[in-house]
Image (spheres, rainbow, N blue to C red):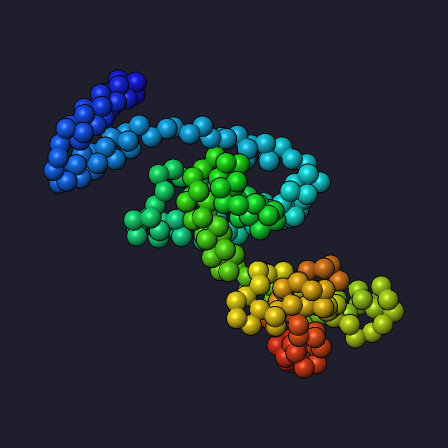
Length: 250
């Protein structure tokens, strides 16, 4: 590598001298092209953090949840569920000429995806933390989201009749009120202020958001999610969130 650098430096000096002595723009342009090619030879080997994922594996449950906002057991289950989808997307991207030079493990991809959504960090910061290129972080996040969407209907779903009977019994024992199969509430999901009709998304707390309604069972497992209305819209369940109402009627 050292010999290659010395050779490249000598050639660059020679090109620079010939460019100064040449008066023709075409020759100068060719010299610039050659200079760019040689500069690529001198590209620095940037040191990368290679052991961060190994460090994460040593996190206890409390530390893991603090950093990734998910239980460690749930993370392991998520890795198992997403593995075939992440692998399929990696092969698909490779067939399109977008394959990465290095093979990234499923666990590392899931950690990158969770960290991206759990912490307010830039792609560059994630690239430094996980020891990969910026473009690799971008691809991993895209694959992570696509894979989660593949399994969402199996995870976030309305309970069966038998499951609702169990929930009803649990809620009745907890509060003494019969006929309850889930708890429902709304929240604001912060978003950047949209252009144009951005004021419609300003909620009563004076920041841009989208209304999101969630329903969960007695174990706080999410059963239904509805999002999309601007933050200024009141979360009146009867008129604003018809999807869940239709489910409840059924």
